[in-house]
Length: 345
Image 1 (cartoon, rainbow, N blue to C red):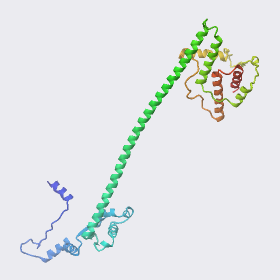
Image 2: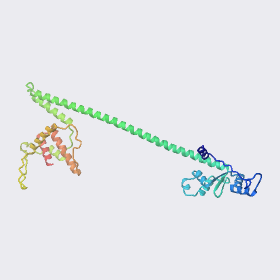
Image 3: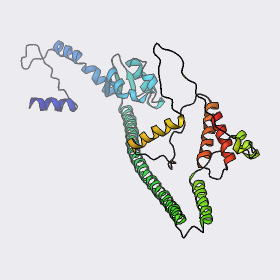
């Protein structure tokens, strides 16, 4: 019960009833003017009565007044002043209309009812507008966070859908390419089988022509060639060997290892062709891969190059090798020119 009364007194406006003694001896029907005057002075009853008589019924200390109404001043001014200066500035900011509605004492501010109502009204309006600004910013932040989540979810869904469509399209095109390759392979096999039969002996020339045309169309359809270097293109157009293919020979030079290291090493001599054939056979047996033209693009065809010249040189070699391996329209002379250019690089 005692705690309830304390809470009620703390929340409400407390009105104190002050009692005065008529005499020091507490006797009935005895009045002592000195005792009464001393109590009136200690309770400031005369000053309070004069304030009410002069029209200043409301009073507050400088600390409470500055804390309650400092929000009416700009923020930069309210930080660098004392409570007395703050109280004086707050009252002067109300204009000449309320110039006679307040008095400043030594420790308190005395106000009339119109000035107090004006200050309370301005304070309530400022608090309402500040609450609206806070609510607006909070709602804005919540809306932005909600929108960001929805946007992220939409982006995730869109990326997933686009990825699924792209994979489906790639798979469809891959099936079409495989189907076309299978059809061409079956057609070539049928032509070969028909050419080997006795009934097709008379049409060997026609079948060979159709076979070459099929090979050329398949190679042109499946392989996209790169531009050759200008010097190689000029040699191919001009005909460097002038139909002297019978005089062309490929010579291999092998330098024997003669350096002695205490004990002579007897290494087996093996040509490049033999080494490639033996190692390719081992790779085929172990991995089961077939040595044939790749139908899928190479992700990283070149190693890292330090300069642009090295990269262009590698690109030119790749273009020449691609033409040399897949272009069935070149004759023997052009293939020889292209092979010599590849060896020189």
